[in-house]
Structures are given as C-alpha cells and as structure tokens.
Image (cartoon, rainbow, N blue to C red; front, top):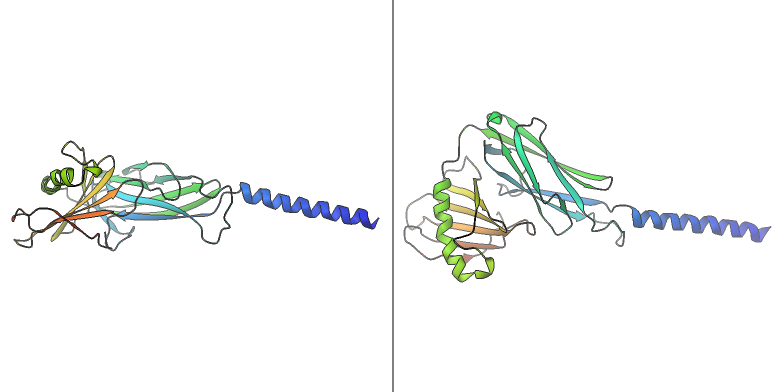
Length: 254
C-alpha cells in the first residue's frame, strides 16, 4: 500500500512538472514596446507633438524581451503584431512592417487630415504577442498652416547626395534615389528640420537660418526598419561658402 501511494504521488508530481514545462514552452514570453518620435525634442517625446495637416508624423516602434523572464521559452523572440488607431478618423495611419521581432523597427506614420486642424489627435499604438498586449498613446496637436520649406529642404538634401554617391557608394544613395519628404516641427524658426524617406533610408535634414560662416546644414542617416536612431551624420559648415560635406558625430539628441 505504501509503495502504491508513493507511486501515485510520483505520478502526480511528474504530471505537474510536465504540465508546467509544457506551459512554459508554449506560452508567449512577456515583452516591452518602445515608441519614439522621429525626431522629437526632448528625445523620445510622444506627447504634445505639433503638426500641420498633411504632415507625416513618424514614430518608430521597437520590442524587447521583458527583463527577468527565463530564457528558452518557445515564445521568446517570436513576432509581435503592431497596429495603430485614431478613434476620430481624422488621420491616415500606416504601419510598416506590421510584424516585428526584437532587433527590428516598425514605422507608424500618422498624416492628420484638414478636418483635424485646431484639434488634438489621440493615437493608440498596440503591440500584441499572443494574448499579451502593450499599448502607448500619442497626442498630436494639429495647427493651422502648411509646409513652406519643402523646396529649400530639397535643395539642402541635394547638396549632400552627389557627394554621398561618390564617397559612400555603400549607401546606394544617388541622384536617382526617390524620396518622400515632410516637415518635422512647424514651430522651429532658427534651426529648420525636415525628413526625407527613401526605400532604405531616413535622411533627417537640418539647417541654420543665419549668415555665413554660421549657415551650416547637416544630415543624419538612419537605416530604416533596423535602427531607431541615425547611424551616420554629415555637415556642410557653410552653405554660401560652398564648403564640402564632412563626417561628424551623431549627437545624442537626434
């Protein structure tokens, strides 16, 4: 009888252990989600962002395994589905890619409509892995006005492109590269900010509105979908001085 009891207890214990192991290896691993604005001041700000109607507001989404979760779960490193919604239907929202893993970056682009002028949009970004969910809320104040610096920003961009084609052919940035541009912050008037997106790169262009020799312009290059901040930076110290571009360090704030 005693041996039989011990045998039954062992069966129960082994069954519980196997059940726990099965749960561990089939349950999605907890994850964290990071949302940053491209770019923002202060860095990473996702609230009280200002925009014009028609402006592309770009947000970068990354995911990581939650600290403290034991390694080896079958759910570790699995895909996270990314989505974004704006309940007022006053913005066009795209998410690409819609599925990412740790080490990858998704871009959520929010384009406020004309109907949203003088209103504040609330955008909810959601990451889902199985039944696990993480959310972040973004607020965008839509101002009256329009992008009036696109032509000059394009001129600044094109001062770097031929030089990059010759000096950094590994970037595959040439005069034939196609770009989509958008103003970044409608309220900045001393240092102007603009973003251009190609198939593989984000080129963030800034320029100092002043006289020589302080009329610099700079670009920051971020590989899209793999990096959440620029990997390269270049500067023309004086535009009117027709100086050549030169490499500079990527500042922390970008």
